[in-house]
Length: 442
Image 1: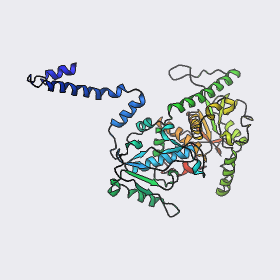
Image 2: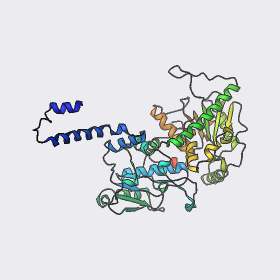
Image 3: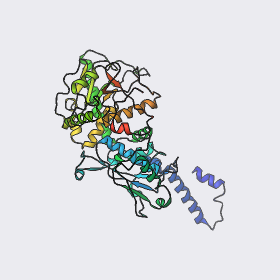
């Protein structure tokens, strides 16, 4: 009504009697403008609002084009290899000034039997809208429905073999920027899958993309259930030991959650065979760790008051020793999925989702202990390091700063596990992709 009065005041309606139709036309225009302004706030749900804002907010970096795309092969192998491959594909698309077409992930874990892979859409695991909102202006994910098919895809064949160096790969990518390549709506990268592509991007760029990955609500709900079970077990352990939990928040309230330790326990048969061969080739003795060695190292961590629950993240189906919860020191109450009573949550999920749940449980633990040659452990520590950096903490040496991480396969100065933070200054992901025993607390 106010808008109409303003228009009348400006004499936009003071027309001769003859063009009454013009009045109606102006009213229709006003209504259309109002609808355009208010439509995002009338969306059915939050995801629709996010889609609207993502599509209407102008790019901070115009080079990330919405009308040009990169397509990559299906992403395979373990969860964290898939995360690395996805991030590498995103950064490649960014380098080419294009959006990445939403790739297929792999729900199953097969390394050689490609025909047994079970493809799963990215947005069945991670929230598509939140990814674009969090990574806005850095990289962009697109749906296949955005492709207009105005031209045949331009194929970019990835090279292979020892002669295909990092320099040759980068030179090839540069040849697909502008020029004739710009005439093609889609650049289709064929050949090796992204995890095996030469790496050109710094760790901090990967960390930014990993930080944009948010689980879809259905999986997040399962994560919360598992963590709640762990904290309930911790509450019982403290109650049985007659220990109160009265630590206060900064605001004075006393409802802090019960802390827990998460240990990524790599003692499965396939891992032990693999790491023993790895030690022989590298002449290193800091890759494999037995159950007894892990228990000994973890028991020397003093970050948390005991009794404390220790959640053991382990691939149960590949585990030969079902006694992993026994033998722990006094005050360390070990739980795995069966003892915790959450096997039903995991059993109904494919491999990829099981791993995604365990990753978040470990990432959100008060203390995390893992193996510095395991991609799972490496990316958990990267996630925790990124959070510490965001809090202004670039070192965990000699103090308990919260979100502590340790490598149980590397001995620290005090004889316990080595404190562990990711080196965010690394110029590529080589050490994070394949592991290292050169870890430190800063």
